[in-house]
Length: 575
Ligand SMILES: [Zn+2]
Image (spheres, rainbow, N blue to C red):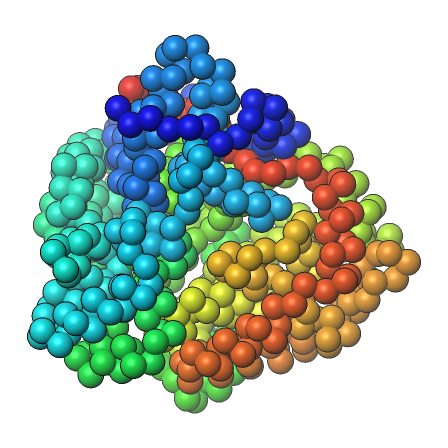
């Protein structure tokens, strides 16, 4: 067994695993009415789905870091011996779902000495530098190894060394044992689950896990995205925020031109998650209110005569609110935060080319606020007292609905050429479109005047972070950029040490920023994106001032999931 040295001291671990510093999000428990009310067949199916999700986690751990699984084995052995540090370290390992993470203060947390996060995570060779990566690709193209290069630069391959060259192995081939096990579980779930459409999806998904062929994934994704009225929710989430290696090609114009000449578009690697839940009917009804406005929103996107819209008139967009049972792998990894919702498949996926739509899934238990007192303390510390009445946590959910749907608006392309800025700009677009349309949706009757103010004030107050992020934290970088932009446009001021929102200036500011974003997505010019991000990603004195106050009120450094129902259903199938 591989040996490791622990990186955090017992004192540090005790602090980081205590209630104040590690928040817990509670997923459904075995006695949850949502579970007890399910039909027997769906209950049985649910246990297979949880097992499938847990196996996905095992794959993702390997994509995330070369040493994750060895370290987990080491931890378990040390815990057996009674090692206290191992026990505490494992709490963080389970929360982060891996050895390396970034906490809410943007500190890098490494659980073992000498093992750090790599730009290529676990999907590129450990010792491969950006320079060597580019050099090898150039050589391989010179040697006419075009198909081989294509395999290296897809979103679904692990890259390994092969002599002096590199080779890309499709996830399904690389993890054929695990993928087969997941497929088995999905097929078993399809035997008892009560919904035919859902079962059809499970069978298609199982097929896509048995043969390494993106076409099968496209069929599965297309069916998945059409699911609206099913009792259960299951998703293999595939997002590519973590890979910081593939995108470096866009910083090398010579190599990029060479690839373009051969029709190769490098796509960042997918990281995998398994989401299992029970669809909440009432919550879902509330969500779908926005659906009828989507064509109108598409009409109002900036420069919309210059591109094909992401969303068509018949708006193939489904959306469900889900009571969470399991979030395994990438989707469940707490690394300073965890996602409230996802709109999948992303623009790089082939299902969108065969007429497939997209589906939003909202994570109910993630958005629930457990500590209202703490929230009040936060408002007291940072927000103008006269505007407290407009702060509403529910308004954040309405904003998120706008955000997720906005991912389906705008130019229909994946913008790979924007490299490391691609995700920052896409998230920036979703936020600013959500905000830019608040007035229009109020006019159209979706929001009341009161709700309009609540969304605006809540957004601006939540746009202040506890610490300055690093450039690789796409989600947080765009928050800083927006904050700066709003300040520039006079959308808020700091008065007597508190944020005062100039409510009527927020939506026009968002519209102006959205114009700039869409322009960049249309032009797909790396240098322009670089300039735009650098101009706006400035940590101001006001941000630092509010951050200090936030740090005092909210001490949490990370979070974790409590998945009692999933743990019971998985029975020994967990990692
Ligand atoms: Zn988003």
